[in-house]
Length: 352
Image 1 (cartoon, rainbow, N blue to C red):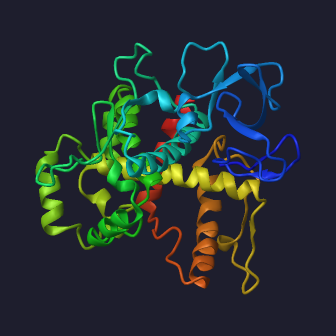
Image 2 (cartoon, one colour; image 1 turned 90 degrees about the horizontal axis):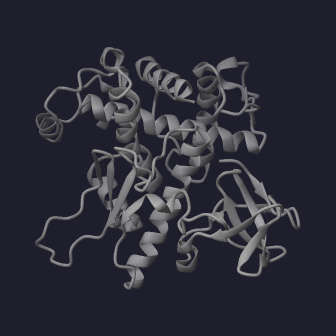
């Protein structure tokens, strides 16, 4: 994520801001320009200071305080580039569900920020694409004896459980599953990884090279899932995988690695926006030093990313521990996992 500032008063802004705290200007995100802009009403439309020659409308979900993205005034669509991918949303007449849905949409917009910056295909349901990127955001049924909604992916459709937006419930599941990390954004990044496996691996004739790194995806998924829940990962999983869940099946190894790739790129962009430089004074250790002075979305070689990422994670983990908090990035990247991340980087760059 980059840093933004108000074009009216130069106040630094957060990506989710809808109003500048200093000058009270309304704010809207222009996805085609990658800009969070101060906007002024202009009749039935808005004039964006980041693009004064065009007129815009807010996404209709702005009225529900669930979106701050804009569409061009002359566009047919009333939903923004992120919201138009929703196929099903929960009943928003319930205030609790509305509050949870807003959290889900906030995380999804951060996902789409990265997908658009990386120039990945994001066909919407009305695009005519044979396999569009679609989201069903569902609440659990009122009957407690009925099966609960499970977050997952199936043929381009990502089902997202609204329950995950509840902090207490998500933390309960994270603890019960023994996971070091569980967030809404992490879920989106993981599940969309399955979608891009279909688009960039299966449909692009890359199965042989995928199997060389990740294993044979033709292995029975149901059996792999059952085995994982019964016995867990192998004792040496940390030597080959980015997470314990990645050991379950080659598809999950890909999705976990894909999510981590998006973690790395997005966090490095923010570090670069702040001019972060890591140079510990306790010892001369080149592996602990970095200066994030490049655009991670355009880095040619993955080594540039990993050389900056490892020192950055050492630093932020230490900062978190100073506050008595868990590590911000509670993972260790062995060489085998780094090779998988590098492969994803190559696939993404070739797609661009």
